Length: 294
Ligand SMILES: C[S@@+](CC[C@H](N)C(=O)[O-])C[C@H]1O[C@@H](n2cnc3c(N)ncnc32)[C@H](O)[C@@H]1O
Image (cartoon, rainbow, N blue to C red; front, side, top):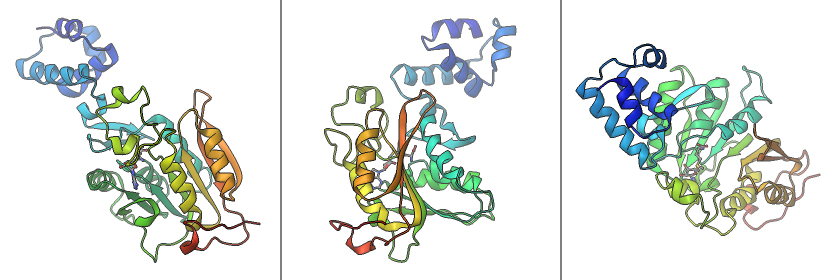
């Protein structure tokens, strides 16, 4: 079988077929164009056919290849973690805009999954102290592998913690200069869920799916401000139709300078607010407590 025969018969989008040829058969696009009649050996063809069947079944290309590029880094991924999305780079950029390379802020990534956000921040800010939380032990293994592979050995290790959002933090955790999160925010019954069936439901809808998808965002907005330093930012990714609701949650929690950031398509996908310089919310009184910032 020739390269052209396989491409014409695989029933995949051309971009996916070319990616498989490159990764699994070592054949780049230029070779396909210049030598379409080159023969595929049997072993390569077997690998390509198996991978093509997984893609036709709707599995993300990133799982089939075992990696996805995010913020310039090649992250390992597997079905234990959400495939990192380009939109989430907005959250990383939000933090990086606030610091120079030598700064040493305390940063927290809630729901780290593959470690996409936390590892990118630790990579770009070598002196930062980066903490990351996830409820899933299998996801934390992926984050750990990415931290080991992508961060220089001399860098302080990421603090990876398993647990339920802010409750995962030990009592001696510092206050954070930025808390970022891309939490589950897909509404129960969302029509896109069947197409996302290969990704973990804990990452998409969370442990307790809600009709508006805001359950985990509400919990994070309720509990995170008590862990911010003065002037610290809470920045959250959310769905394309949730910006107004998330801004309202942040403002109701007393955060200041509440605003949203738009993705490349002009859609507000991240909203953020800042702890004022007044009274600090007590950490042990945030569950139902009320506090004000001046
Ligand atoms: C949308 S994924 C984001 C993954 C990664 N940060 C990214 O942007 O690609 C949400 C993550 O939150 C984690 N998660 C869900 N519920 C959680 C909870 N109650 N506490 C901590 N992590 C949770 C999931 O396991 C998942 O890894």
